[in-house]
Length: 392
Ligand SMILES: [Ca+2]
Ligand SMILES: [Ca+2]
Ligand SMILES: [Ca+2]
Ligand SMILES: [Ca+2]
Image (tube, rainbow, N blue to C red):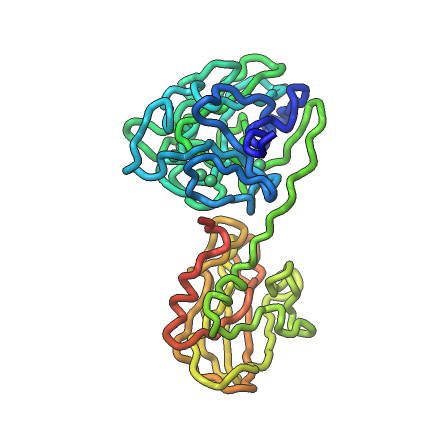
């Protein structure tokens, strides 16, 4: 069987039934048991070793950070920008239930109104609409799910596009489950190129899923093994290598012993705020003497703002605090500091002092990734290299 065909077929059968418990149910998009109305557009699975090549499709694979390391995309994607022709019934369907329909069986224990959230990845303005239905009906409140925020990253949302508000109104996307038992939840295309990772239904109007969302629970059947993980090169590595002339020292090349820092994962140093509020580490600058643009790569956290102070031979070159984030942590330009045209001699001591921050309840961990010494005038270029969570 051609690889492409295989990627549009279900990987579970209809005996696999998901279960709502305590008013919530969570399902991977790739766990549909049936796909219909597929002559013009279909959903295709992408994972580390599975890349559908189906006509026009200008964006890359986005397995990194996808729940279960896999997702579905409606292909081909012939309407990428507003200037591409809109063809009803081909690259767009304002009528739900007509094109690329996915089915999921869910056992509901608690009847009631369920708000539908979907985790999607949008790279443009014409790949961010979807419809949701129930038992082959397509109620008004499942139509025109819309994403505007969170471009180029996996983003949970639950909003209905209206004539007045194109970016969608919250709390308007819901399905009414009138009795307990097994129901079929369905999704169909509104815009081609849509990328679909996971969905949840919750009877709590205030619930907001974060990160990869709640775990999948089964009422019966068995799920296939997870897809292989896709590792991204670290942000620090990516921007360090952006110019061959860059010199750099990763945080984890700094000594840890007796500094109050610990190694956090493979790329960062951090402070355990339950033990320490400050940490300092020093290493030698073993590169050519000269002037450099110094980029300090800190991590933005959502519990507050850490503070970093960098010194060369005990003379401070500056202090700064990365901005607050919405995610647990984030890397990118706005979390870095840049000091231009700094004179450094071979053998100078480079010292990083970190202090945890707080939002009044939780503490940050003073996470940082390293320091880049770029040629003078190139600091901005390094700063503008892509961030971890933005994929093309
Ligand atoms: Ca694509
Ligand atoms: Ca499209
Ligand atoms: Ca796409
Ligand atoms: Ca998924």
